[in-house]
Structure formats: structure tokens, C-alpha cells
Length: 524
Picture 1 (cartoon, helix red, strand yellow):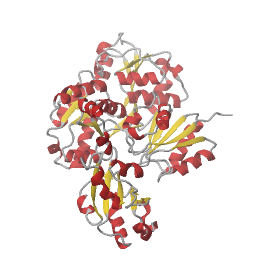
Picture 2: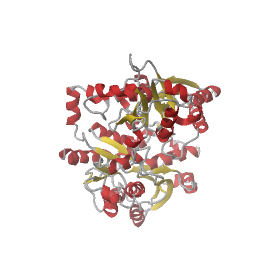
Picture 3: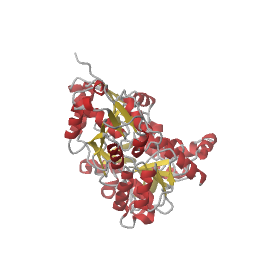
Picture 4: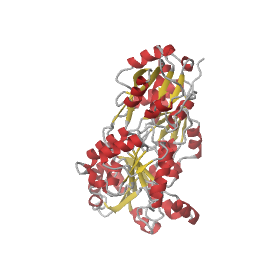
């Protein structure tokens, strides 16, 4: 009988890593496959073990996302493949999550499944904003609703409920307020809108049913929790020192405040532009130095337009002397395709492997392989200058990105007498739209640094900034530090932005982090 794996449906809490349960954290550290929603703290993803397959199925900002049926089948397939799968869902899995569908699909397929509760944002957001949901005088109970189907709600009953908590409600807030007023809710009833609850960028707006729309006009409110009721007025007494900071700030010990203040990047907001699936490591480095990290993915990694060239190269591996891998994406897509074609690592026994960069070497190691050569300066185009043997008469297989290949590297090897098999293994493109949180932060002058780990992220970031900020987008960048991982990326920064302020001395994410610590840390 074929052994199946197990799926753990884990509630991630309101988003911040601090509110994940210990059981959830333990399972995350043991996951072989992670299937996660949007708005999950990237620090959680940094805790994944090496080799864990990460799959983002989140729905956010109208971007394309898998259907629920596709997610159900994905979980079944990975469990039937014998994998330990963590399905990470925001809040609590059964509070307005589609967990029932997933559990039913798994059990119908004979797969083992366990649900681990999480802290719902319906409970955490009011608390972190200093709003009690119950009170001996003002609230003897509360109701939690979602705004997905307003027509089905019993508005007269809701209007009589002392405290209402509404999730996913900001887009339809005007309709909600009107329905409550028509059902008899007093126009002067207090209301709070809590955005990014528990995160460093938490914001809270308070008002009444009559005033809140005017107070939040022009603001980006999502993701937010809305609280309606007299208990909102208690916030003044429970959070006197700062009406927009998370409650934990006021409960922090003097020792913790000192440690936070001493972090070199404390008080700095840094934007990371790596692809969504590859930003967690860099974001983790920055957060450990005290930075507030915002992510605006400027790359989407996807399969090439055709697998034919790579499949032909895999079929002729016996003729290859060296495999050249210049990125983590090249490692992943090449080895995945190798396996898809029915081969395993034994197919690479007759060749040597050269990689560029620590990250590429690390990803290669997670797949059970070690590089025979890594150039000392982590620059792909210098690989030929430091190659460990003459390449005259050798055949080099170079799986690369479909567009924007390494022309200098290929020319150098070819001029030295090598036959270079240059084949597309993956493609990288620009995401359809910028992250609205980053756009808002730039408009408010709240960004200290934009970081770039490749030339493509520079070009695509400029496209996204123009899309989000309009033709005047460069006027939002004076005073914003532009940081590059290395010379090639810096060259593109000069072409696109006209400047670069920081360049890593060691061309790695760790090196870029250290460069920011030296420059931004000194400016505190």
C-alpha cells in the first residue's frame, strides 16, 4: 500500500510572527511543502527548512489566484505523494476560511489531516488597538461577520447587537453603514477601522457611523478589521499614549525598548523588490537588524515559453562536461525538469557543476548536490576569467532565464573554444501591478530605502512605480536610498534612476544587508 503524507491546516494568526501558536511554529519548521495564503508574515516563511516547497495560493488585490477546487486538489496530490504539508491560513482556519472544503477533499481521498487553531484577527485586532470586545456595562457580547454577502445578513438584529466586528469590509463600508443606520443604529455610534493589526505599520481610525467615511477618505484601508460599538470609546482610556501604535508597544519592557532602539536599522523602512517566492530570506536579514520591511515583488518567475530546448539538452547530458548555474532559479527549474523527464541525480554523474553566488550554491546543496567550482567574486560574467580549467573543446550546458541572458559570459566561453549550450529554463517578468502598501508609503514619504538584487528588478520596479504613482513618480524618490547588490545592478540603477547610493561590497544578500547597516545605521 502506498504511503500517504499528512496535511496540517495551521492558523497563522493576524499575520505577525509573534502571534503564531507554538504548535504551528513547530510544524512549520518540519514542513516539506508549504501552501500559504496572502498577508502571511515573511518571517514565518524564513523558518522553513531547506528544500521545503513553498506554494503561494493567496488572493490579494485582484491578482490571479488558484480556485478553491485547485487548492483542494493540490493538497490531495502532495499528501498522496507522501509529503508533510502545512496549509498556512490567516487567522483561525475556520473563521471565514474555506477550510471545510479542503478537509473534506483530503478525507474523501483518504489523506490524513489535522487542524491547528490560530488567533483570529476578529479577536486580535481590537485587542491590539486597545478595544475590548466585551465590557460589564457597554457590551455583554459581540458578533463577528464578513462583508462578502451583505444581502444575506439580518440587519435589524445586527443593529441591536452591542458590538459588531466586521472582516473584509472596507470595500463595502458605505453600504454597511447605511444598512445599519436604516435598521436603527444610532448615527453617533463609535466605530474603529484597524489596518495591519499587530504589524509595525498598524493604523487605527476612530469616529462615528456618520464621520468615519470622511475621516478615511482617500486612505488605503485593506487589510482591516472594523469594530462598531460603544466599546470603541474605551480605547481613549486603554491606549492613552499613542492612538495608532500596536498595544504591545505600550506593554514593552524598558529592556526590550532599549534593544529595539539599538538595532542598527531600527526606525528605517526598507522596500524589498525580489520575487514573491524569494524575498523571505532577505527580509529576514533586514528585520533582524531592526528594519520595517515592505515587499513590492518586481519579478514573477515562471516556466519558459517552451521546454523543448531544455528537454533536448537533458537528453544529451552524456555529452556535457560542465553544467553552469548562475541563479537559484536556474537550479530549481533545471533539476525539477530533470526529474520530470524521468531522471534523477545519477544523470549528472559524468559532469561537473559551476555556480555563481552563495545563494545558488546553497539551493544546489538542498537538492543533494555540491558545486565543483564557485568564482570568488559572485559575478557571473567573470566566471570565464576564473574557471578552474581550460575550456577549449569542452561542452558547457547553461540553463538560464529565457530573456536577458548572460551574453558576456557566453561570448567569453565561446571565444575560449568551448561549445556553449545556452537553453531557456525559466522566465521572469514584471508583476501586473505594484503593492498598494508600498505606493502609499512612498506617497507619505515613509520609505527610507529601495533595494535591488538584479537588473530586472530595477527595470520592473520603475514600471511598477510609474503605474502606481503616475508620470511624476521620480518626485517621490528624493531622500530614498537606492541600494544595489552589485556592479551590474548598479549600472542599471544609473540607467533607470540616474543614481545608486549603496552597493554591496560582497555581492550577496548578506552583503547588501551589511552595506545598509553601515550607511543607514550611521544616519540614525
